[in-house]
Length: 95
Image 1: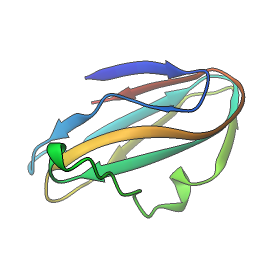
Image 2: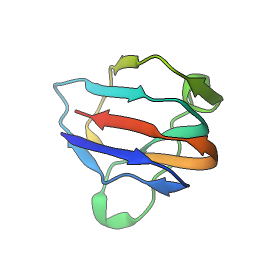
Image 3: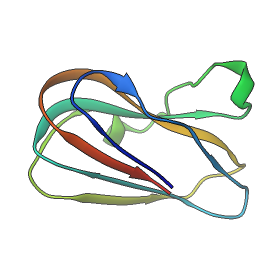
């Protein structure tokens, strides 16, 4: 499990999700920021293309918690990128 916060632009630590289990993502806090979920099949390649999902590509201003479970296949390495930051604190968990 990876947990952390964004209070500026940045990238979370990566987490490996095998082929047989879903990726759980939790985002909470009061913030105005753009958070992207990214996937890489090989940790050493250094490439994390953005997941093509509008839910992760929009600005979010939140005071309530968003709990999202994503079904994925096949497995791979995942991280979150705070690509645009305006204010507040983004609290995240990848599991």
